[in-house]
Length: 162
Image 1 (cartoon, helix red, strand yellow):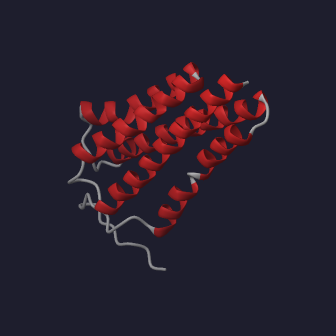
Image 2: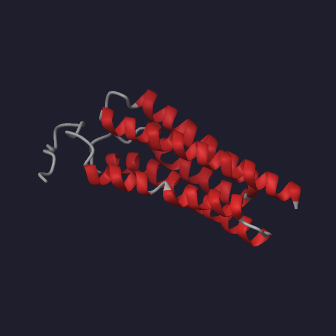
């Protein structure tokens, strides 16, 4: 398969590589696994594994998606504005706080982080980022928010019923 053409002077690459799309969707599997651990866990250990997996993976991915902006600035494609610096660092700080808070509140903070970052990225950089990248990010962010929300609800219910 031929690689898409990129030029240094163009901010919009020709499209998201199919392997990146596959990797993005495969990155949802740990969120599904976390939900399954909580839903089908028969003890506190199962719930804790699901909670820690959702928090850890969610924090890593939230930091990862915001790092795209850092990378674009490092590569000289975006200027080092306050918005770029904040947009590429605040989600990582938010993710770390979510891990420290833990439990359902930490999961809720990750949901807010993914949702707000997607809105920020879509509204602020709609002209600079490829449409297929934004569509992929929308699909992945929405799915992550739903899976984290379901995990939080299941975790809360499992703890109330135990």
